[in-house]
Amino acid sequence: MENMEYIDDYFKGSPTDLQKQQFERRIINDNVFAEEVAFYISANRVVKEQLLMDKKQRFREIYEQHKVVPITKQPVKKIWRYMVAASVIAAVVLSTWFLLGENTSPQQLADRYIQQNFQTLSVTMGSKDSLQYILNLVNSGKLSEALTRLETLAQIDPSNKNATKYAGIVSLRLNQYDKALTYFSMLASDTSLYSNHGKFYEAVTLLKRNKTGDVEEAKKKLQEVVENEQEGKEEAIKWLKKLD
Amino acid sequence: MTFDNPTIISADEELIRSLQQNNAFKRKAEEELFNRHAYFIKEGMSKYSLPQEEAFDAYSDTILQSIDNITRGLFEKRSSLKTYLFRIFSNKCVDLIRKKTTIKGSVHQTSSISDMLLMIADSAKTVIQQLVEKTDLDILKNKMHELSESCRQLLAMFADGYNDKEIAITMEYKTPEVVKTSRLRCLDKLRQLYINKKD
Image (cartoon, rainbow over all chains, first blue to last red; front, side):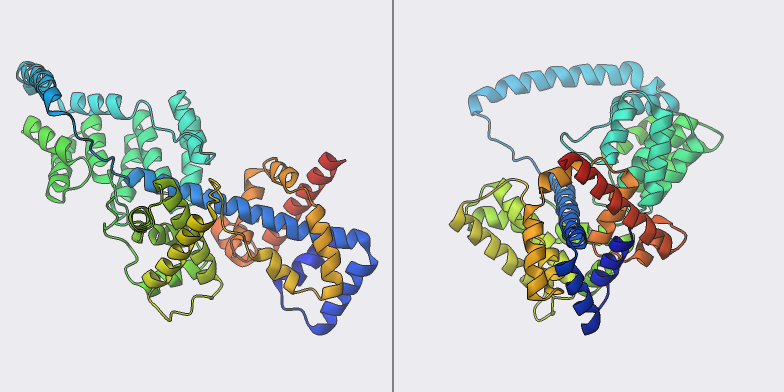
């Protein structure tokens, strides 16, 4: 440990000529010391290589998130099949809309959204990131443990907005609405994100909580989502119609 | 791809400053640098006829090399950041075409080893070089994963150019001295793991 500190100080600082000579003499005359110097250099190399690989993986995830899948042209002959299928689906959706839509309560809207979008959180294959480990916890139902880890992660690395987002989602699933609103509000205020569901998730949480004034507040948030063309806009338009 | 959304850091100067400051915003600045010129990947595909995967590799290696250069003050601002990046990117694309040695996940070689060796005079340097070459890097990599997460993070931040004071602030340690002691303990533990496995 003493040698390691000496080696560390040497490489971190700006050694004088005398210090350099002393250091080099020890390398030549002391095999154990020379091995420690070599280990220090090798360890730094391995750590740095791992660091660069992690950064590259992070870039890959960002790139994958923003990649637009090219639309392949369908042969004209097959289009009619899709049109028929689309018509049937549209008919079913419209019937459901007229039969059930108007009776949907704010909480039901939120419940349905949570069920469809927050039940299973997507995990990027092959990633060793601690966030991925936490999302696996969420998907296996260990919500409280996942929330604790997410909160720690968000605290250690405030720039990790995914940690903030998932902390909000897991809080919502645990019915900890105030906490969820805090996280989603932090997310919503971050203007650097390309894809920011913060405001829309705030609205979902308010609808789910459904305390006095919550629905009105949620409507305001949804309106802002629509006006600012934020993530969740399409859902927000539909919900605003239903909530009116 | 659409990478033209609003960003927190708009000018090159601000971005460079953020990359040079070792704090919580560095990660965001790195991502911002990556995103800002991500359209290069498409250019790599069209101009150099590279498959998307190889164009991505060339681009991400470009960004990693640039971050390293900027952090170490080697970017002299003689051109715009975009021009600087594109020059590195073009060279990497051309290298890929020439050599046809695209290894997935490969990263540019770090200069930290040569930097450290430069601090040692020739006679002693040879001794160290020989010992470094004997080191089994695969075992060392595996052993690194046996360290605790906080140890790995400490070592990673140090390798990323953070000094002990900056690590103390970012990871909320009481003092830089505590960081240094913990970091050296981690290094010592890694050495013990490596020696035991090797024996």
